[in-house]
Length: 75
Image 1: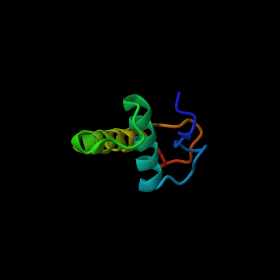
Image 2 (image 1 turned 120 degrees about the vertical axis):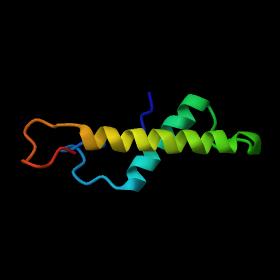
Image 3 (image 1 turned 30 degrees about the vertical axis):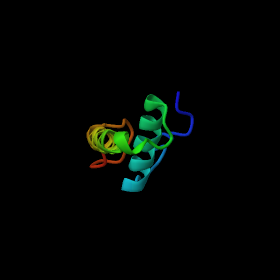
Image 4 (image 1 turned 90 degrees about the vertical axis):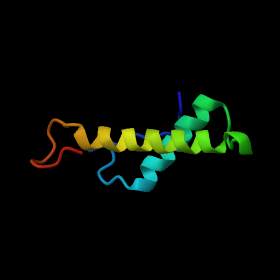
């Protein structure tokens, strides 16, 4: 479990910035890979993974429907 990854969906976090999503993605990839910072020969794969996780996270947050959220605000 990545304890430093915070919940990003509303209403827990009402305003999520790209930096928040990137930070969560970075923590996830660090945990899964076991590397805080990858060696030079793994850097591209590491960064691509962070980008992919961040993109998937943004899509997830954009598509979530939160019960009780104000009309027109899905995430």
